[in-house]
Amino acid sequence: MSNISTEELEQKIEAGEEVIDRYFDSTTTRIGTPRSMTSRRLQNFVATNLEMPRPMLNELDQLAEELNISRQAVIKMMLRRALDEHSLAKRAV
Image 1: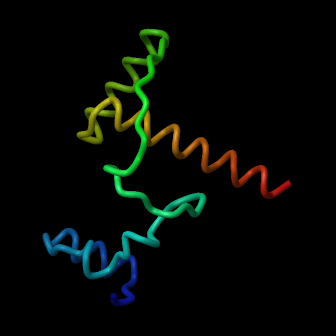
Image 2 (image 1 turned 30 degrees about the vertical axis):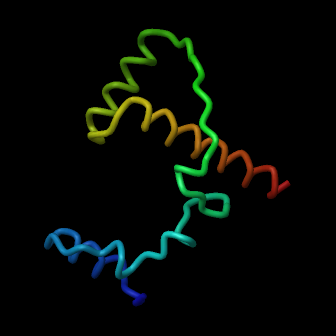
Image 3 (image 1 turned 135 degrees about the vertical axis):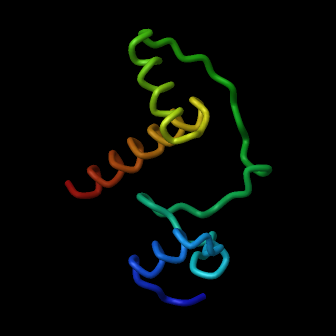
């Protein structure tokens, strides 16, 4: 793996170059709380239902459309971020 500046990385991405395998190590690249990486196949998934107000659901759908990802992916992303922020805040005390 090589070191690269943010600007250089952005230029390569904009040029359409594949950068993931060359510049990122998927076993260590994380945002937020460090956790060991686990293959999705090895994770124990549990289905759950979530009730929320229609306006909140509309906001989630709008964000999902902007990011071109599913509503479920938006919810998981936001929950992960909130859990990471909470964990970091607890450690700061």
